[in-house]
Amino acid sequence: MIVVTTNEVPGYRIDAVLGEVMGMTVRSANIGANFVAGFRAMGGGEVKEYTQLVYESRQEVMHRMVEEARRRGGNAVVGMRFDTGEIAQSFSEVCAYGTAVVVSPIPAGQPGATSQSAHQASSAPAAAYPPAGGPQDAPPDQPAWR
Image (cartoon, rainbow, N blue to C red; front, side, top):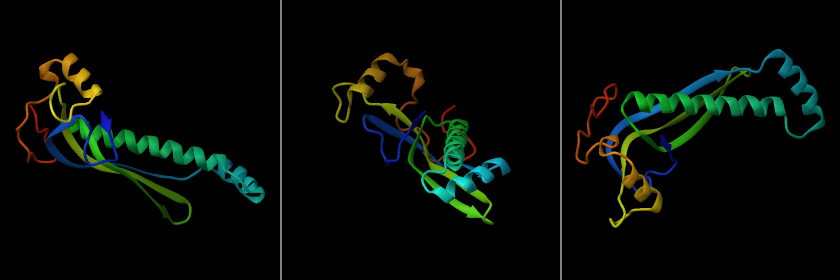
């Protein structure tokens, strides 16, 4: 699964837009981490217990977003972003979101091709990528390609 923060994937053609996908989690640190972090905060510097919590949260929401894109039939997510918030001072909300799309690599010799896409286009079986011009407006809960 290709995940990019840009609206396009260099070397790939977007064949179908499947809609917004997201992954979300709400977390709180365990009491031991809160206790240790409280002491660490008094001295200043990085609070490693919370850094680990945020890192794990971002990994989880990325995984959930990618799985939703896969369920819809996508092979890439464009325009990916993170959003965070706080709920009642004790909970942290983390969300990853973007647009699920179906992309196909642009072969060598065609405008927009990159060395990566050319290599992938030459080594991937034709059935691995859907043909261009397929259904663009599939319902969000249905794969665009069958």
